[in-house]
Image (cartoon, rainbow, N blue to C red; front, side, top):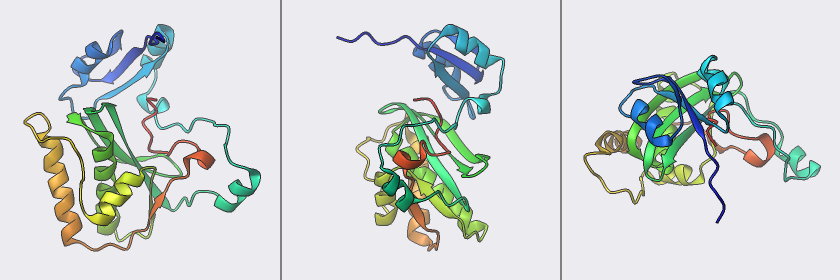
Length: 213
């Protein structure tokens, strides 16, 4: 059995800030803390160094990747449309602590963020992020397109459903309250926004990625 690599957790905003050596210790600091800022690191030194810096310097950075695509495929796909916003979600566990956000695709300026929520799934977060993005773009009468890297979320939005297997409970009530609002919005609104699948293999991680992989 492969030994799980130890991680260290930097918390910039939480009930307590600092570097924590276990996920459970980190979790206590971010649970029920709106707008918590945290990330894991492979070494104690890196975590301590990050604490001295800014949270936004460590998340949402597109990691260089070795493309699995040929030059011809890359040419066919082209570059992202920067007249857009990108959305993504992160979940520590399935289910687990979940949050989602939207950013300007070009500048990576954060446009909205929700969470962390005590119990959710990545799929639910991706779905909520898409609907949140749609609502903002409609409200602003914007012609921007909307990028997501989740085919499941795209399908749920298209079908106006949230086909999660997560059972409702007191713990995840805030999440399902948002799901209900999102479904209600989809059923009572039309929109012209084009939702587009982010080409991760060609462009790297989506700009809204939380960078905690």
